[in-house]
Image (cartoon, rainbow, N blue to C red):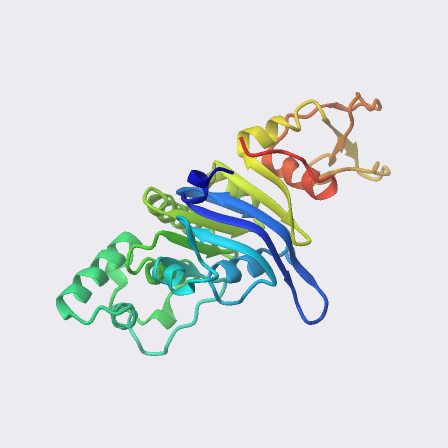
Length: 297
């Protein structure tokens, strides 16, 4: 990586974190994330949340480096915090406090004491996440989707350079998920948005580039297109009728007439298997089973 590259976007190199129970949550993680939407995909316990908390300066790594636009984040965490928006998995709320009042308080906590500025900022944020009509409603009565959008409004105070979003759509219905996707896509026009999730569909719909993490390591990284192309010609499928034994498979899914089985093989495995057009879900399973070596394109 050139010095010019290091001064653009978010650069993570050799990040390690081991907890007191000897669990290695991060093992030499390297990432270079430019403005736009970047996906971090992995199973529960893979290290995603540890990485998000570390990037948000909520905890320190054992070793490694983090820089944002060329500034050493570990040496100057306040630089990161002043340019950071963070939406964790869980969002708390205060009973009886409206969305407008709560947003106003958080804008004030960000150092904006002028009432006129705060009023305009709160209105801007509520409009951006489509909550203007519910501004006087208490946040504790919001639906799950509304609460996630309110969390984005909190994270967007001050127009952050880096927005970290941890498992944002878990539990949301399809309508709220689509609304949330629209908000994130809009934000990514001007900022670096790091989307951490175990939901493949979220990454597929939003991110042109992603990394897959498992057991604290990046096991695949690149554009969605390149990662899918790396699997082409290696996957085969067939539907096994109910009651028959299933062969060893990369992954399986239920079908009306039986179970669709997808296997990896360099040659046609016989027994009725046909070529399978790879998807990002296949990339995910293959990366977890056999880590891919793919350089950034």
